[in-house]
Length: 254
Image (cartoon, rainbow, N blue to C red; front, side, top):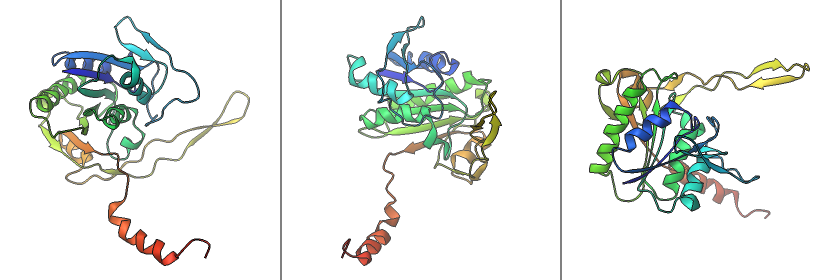
């Protein structure tokens, strides 16, 4: 196996080192990670300036860009081979429900998926790395599973969230759907030293759709949640109604 490892917390994050160590059990590993913390950057690519790549003392290759930049650069020129798997994380905090839309961790994995490479994003459900070793052990079990029993032919994308508890208290794996959150809290308005207004994005909203079968529910119950993702954002169920609407609207300008 050739495995590409990335993250969004930056190349110095403990979760990245832990995930790279796990991946080395299964094959050849290349780590390409952001120079700085890039949480919340979603699928952004850097298009208005050149990117630089340098090698850290750890051997990790470091990009002064986003998580998606890291995987994109790796797959389109930095590596001299195509990896068999792209993994991202282990993130310092959950990426469940609506969080997946903003997550740099998920975006790094998704970039691999967009290039046709199977990919997995791993996150520890609470910040602080308290049970990082537990999350690493879950990651090892998931990786062993997808290598020994690939889920399907072609590319696939998994989002894995691990409850913040010791490994012997993780009850197992559950395949889940994404839950939903309430809207975010209002922005926090402050003033800079010149008295000018500045704004901090408010905290994420609490879970709103967190019933049985959701990622929120599984993690709260003590299971590691595995959610298969896709990039097709089409609302297929609404297509017939919108076709009727557009037909009733008639030809534009006439």
